View 1 (cartoon, one colour):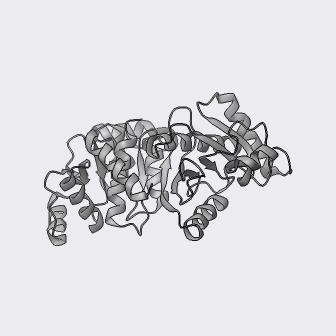
View 2 (cartoon, helix red, strand yellow):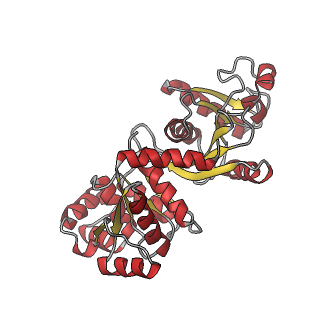
Length: 336
């Protein structure tokens, strides 16, 4: 399968769902163009944040129309008092006041957009084209929070390789590739759970087989880093997760059945991993870029995971098509 085919499948699912997704960064012309494309193709119902006249003027300048989008201006929003009290309740123990909450919601479109998600005006948010990742995740964590049973927000990549003998017909999930520099054992377990869910929801992998990667295979080496991965595997066992997993495993023992038979004969995944959990961000980031550049693999992501509702972060170098694709992903993930 090619990445373009997978994205088309996701777009078709999104069209059938008819969900509302908010794009809060309307000062970015790419967002306006993406909104117009999402509307014209019927992929999602678009909600924009900002001054209506300014948004329409920007659309006209770009030569597109955002007719059909709902537009919320935080400074004129008639339910703002409700939003302010909600944010105050959520963050009161962290020093939030009603005054601070109002200022944030009226002047920070990321917080306002996240509150639209929290209060179910929309199913999700796509942002980051004009904001640092830290700002997007801060608003998401402060307002939406993490999924029940998880404490970790992380990311994963959908990798589509030219080697169908690996993963599921060449498709694998890599995590975490963009958020947590050195995850704890509990965070690694959370990343595994979220990445397995991503495999099912977006990559059509019905039977996730998760490998917790290391430079050691079942005790062949020892270090604090190996122990951390071993502890993550024990945490997954204690949670009775609904997917197969193995670890700690070296990469070859994770994805090559003949190597697994020698190095890890009792492994539940038997060298057939389709979800790879890297021990730290350095390994994950380097790993997916090696696959991209040397093996010509196609990559979709990093995609944020672990939040109670779908909020996705874009690269500031993203294209209009990237925004469209991630909006479709957001709509599909809202059904989980």
